[in-house]
Image 1: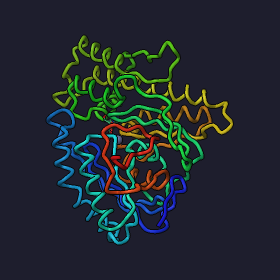
Image 2 (image 1 turned 180 degrees about the vertical axis):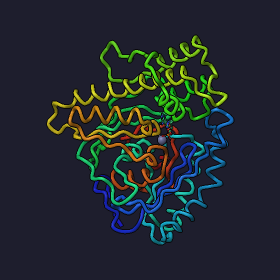
Image 3 (image 1 turned 45 degrees about the vertical axis):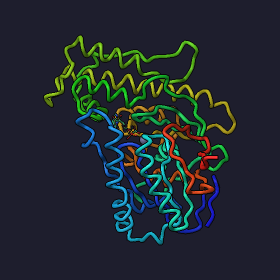
Image 4 (image 1 turned 60 degrees about the vertical axis):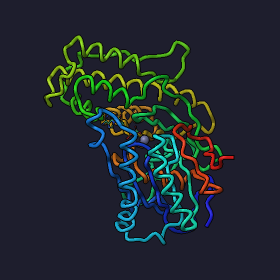
Length: 370
Ligand code: KG4
Ligand code: ZN
C-alpha cells in the first residue's frame, strides 16, 4: 500500500476517519474516490448546554464512551469489517488536548495493531476540503487552486488551497480577535438563546420584518484583509442592552424587535465575510494560475444568509462557489478521512504521533518527539 502527499492514492481499501477534537465524536469510512460509506456523529451538545459552552473534561469522557462503539457501528452500517480498512486518519489538532488524545490514542492502537498507515490530519484541512464531499457518490473533482473560507466556533480564516502539491494550504488572513461562530454564540447568549447560539440567531432573523438595526463593516486602516469581530460583538451587546433585549429569548419567545436585531447582527457578520473574500479574490485575480473556485466550510457555513450571500456574490462575479452539504459543515470524520486522501502524508511512525491543541494548517504535522 502506498499513499503520497498530493499523489493521493490508497491502492486499495477504505480509510477509517476519526474526529474527536471538540464536542462531536465522529467516525467515517471513505473509499479512495471520496465515496462516504459511513459518517457517524455523536453530538455532545446536550451534555455541555447547561454550562453555556464546551467543558473539556466532559468532552474527553464522552469521546471515550462513544468512540469505539461508533467504529463498530460504522463498519456494520457500511457492511464491511476492519479487514477492509487500509488506512486510519485521525484529527491530531488543533482542538481540546484531552479530547484529541482520545481519538489519537484509539487511532494509534488500531493502526499499530493492524499494521496500517496512520494519517495525522489537521482539523482545519478537513474543513477546507469538506465542500467537495457529497453524501451520495464520489467527491466533486477539485480544481488546481481555490480559496476556502473556514468559519467555525474557533476559527475564521481564508486559505489559498492547491490540492496535490507539496504546499497545499496557505493562510491568507485570520481573525485578529474572536471567531465568527464565537461572536454568534456570545451575542446569542446575551439575548437569552441556548448554546450554541448561531442557529437560533439565524432562525430568529428569518422572522425579521424590518432592517432597523444595522452595524458597520469593520475595516483596517492598513488595508489588511484580516477579520475582526470583537467591535461588532461589543456594539451588538451594547445595543441589545439599551433596547432591553438582554435575556429576551429566555422564555422561548422571539419578539419582533429581537428578530430585527438578529437579522441586523447576522447581516453584519455576513457582510464582513463577503467583503474579505471579495478583496482577496480581487487581489489574486491578476495571477496566471489564480484560484478558480471559492469554498466555504465550518459550522457557520450552515448559515442560510451566509450561503445565499456568497452564492449570489459568486453568481455576480461568475465564480464557482462550493457550499458544503450541511452534514459536512459541523465537525465530522468524513472530512478528516477525505483530507488524508487528497492532501495527507502517512506518519513515519504511527506510535509517535502527538496531539496538538494549536496547529496551523499547511504546516507538516510533527510525528516524532525527537
Ligand atoms: O465547526 P463547528 O461545528 O465547531 C467548531 O467550532 O469547530 O462550528 C460550531 C459553530 C458554533 O459557533 C455555532 O454557533 C456555529 O458554528 N453555527 C452557526 C450555525 N450553525 C452552527 N452559526 C450561524 N448560523 C448557523 N446556522
Ligand atoms: Zn471544526
